[in-house]
Length: 219
Image (cartoon, rainbow, N blue to C red; front, side, top):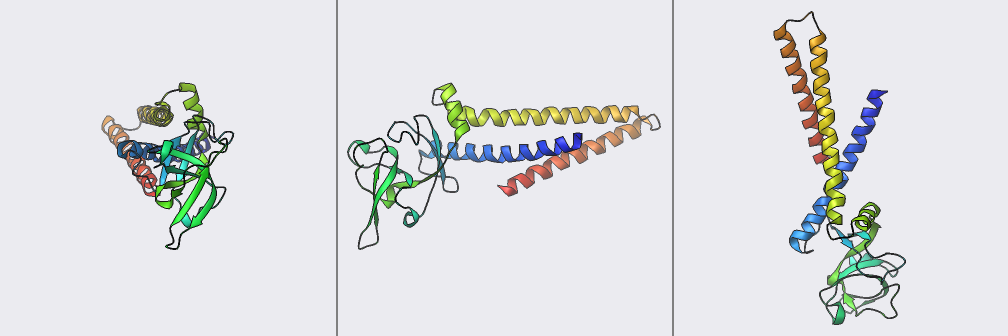
């Protein structure tokens, strides 16, 4: 039973670690490059206004993925960089209400906030960061509790640190268990006990390295 629980924890830990590392990489990349770069086409934004209520509330964290403009359709929610009027230099997430294509093949989009009375200034395909594909609820929830700009960092760093701490505690317990098991063996000499303990720790470290390498390859 203990082995089954341990296996389940390993699977959960691996999934959570990969997800948290990915989200952290997305957030850091955006902050460092001022939203000019994405990770595998993904970006994360926080909703700052009520223009998309009830679909998105203020503080909601949304995951945006770059999408070929030709695959964007009316009804999709897109995030773009505004260049005109009150939208200039602002990152906006609104719904596509109309699409036009010029003779040269350049796409022009009309977008509008669900709660707004009028459409935004028209945008072209080069302004679009991507389409909203998911609302990251647990980040949204923590943002609501913390209520400041550090909420997203807290939501990523704390769970990752907790997983690392749990992994360390489990590792220490395993080492202590190994020591106790070796000491209980009276049929071995002191030198043999030390050597067996050393070999077991070495195998355990190698297993951890192999697991981490496998997780990196899966990313």
